[in-house]
Amino acid sequence: MHRRTFIKQSSLIAMSAGAFGAFDTNGKSLFDSNNLKVNGQRIEARINELARFGRDEKGHGYRVAYTKGDIEGRAWFMDLMEKAGLDVSIDAGGNISGKRKGKNQSLKPIAFGSHIDMVPDGGNYDGTLGSLSALEVIEVLNENKTLTNHPLEVIIFANEEGGLIGSRAIAGNLSAEGLKQISQSGVTMAEGIKAIGGDPDHIQSCIRTKGELHAFLELHIEQGGMLDAENLQIGVVEGIVGIVDWKVTVEGFANHAGTTPMKLRQDALLASSKLIIAVNEVINSLPGNQVGTIGKITALPGAYNVVPGHVTLGLEIRDLSFEKIEQLFGDIQKRADIIAADSKTKISFKREASEVKPALTDKHLQQKIDVSAKALGLTTKFMQSGAGHDSQQMAMLAPVAMIFVPSVGGISHSPKEFTKSIDMTNGANVLLQTILSIDKE
Image (cartoon, rainbow, N blue to C red):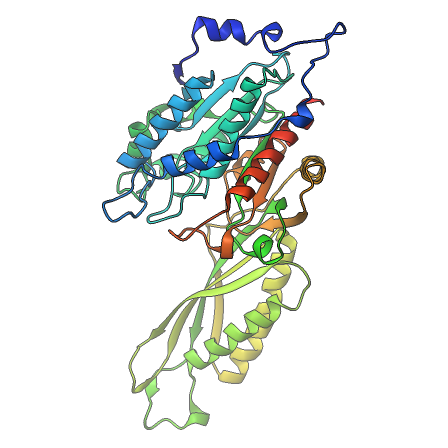
């Protein structure tokens, strides 16, 4: 591990239990943790400040992992972590860790954080809100001279947008082949990790053991429109959906469009159109929040005067339950068999190797979030995450939980991505109070 330690001797002394506030004669802190509140203006100001890194002359954001903007943004963030008294280091995967001692160092750390890299021309809130709110929790505890029982750890994951690279490394799921893949910035993952201070040659050194952390929490914008549309304030995430993709091939017979009667055609594109409608009907046939998409289509030979003879489609199904995904796919296959027989075509499915398993959040932590939010007078909704997050990988190592706040209009991965200041503040306060609640265990 490559360590970057900033704590001065005076800071170390200040972190002793006695220096973190007044206590009564029974040793109980005189500070009421339930009254601790984050500084929403500071979070918003830092959101805007971080947005400067990677911004081009036209005002477009480009803090893509491993680029100059990402490297400069990370340095700025680590400087803030230093000023907050954290023991800062960069692991072999390029993840930034900031540790704060607890009263009882034998207890497992409570970890929380997110990422600060973005997609090309992305928004200023995805990942960034969770990262800056994690830092804000530390700032509030420092300002109120509050020392938690558990050690705390802020984690800023590397290259989340490029495939959860940093968290995959921590979970032991970043292979040698994965390190050779080309990143969005144009360099290999290994080269990019080196550029941000990691050590891809010793990537195994950053693997965390299962049970090493007491819990991991991530605050994030919803990236969808459910909370905004329903005028709700906090989403309690039940899990991150599994994703399975299939390449669908529809084989008909290419023939002259002018001389082939309609009844004699083996039109692969027509059969594909019926299958697309069938997918939509099957997905909507069961209760729940499952989604299914045909997002890719190629028809050959691709001419005005030729009946399409060969079509390939891209099918994706997402849900919290792998069993439901399999059930839905089975129903789609049955519909496909009927369509193929009626249209005199052949329809086949090939499962892609890129499937993502569902990652359920911890029910006990879900309740902690819900109780903390309601104690703050906030409305809540239990919901799933349709997008991927680093918490997916962390769920393999520790109990995890996610807190969602509204995205205006459900817009994300866009310069128009926006979350109101009050919603950011609400989410950060729920994160703070949930951590304090977990710390009492």
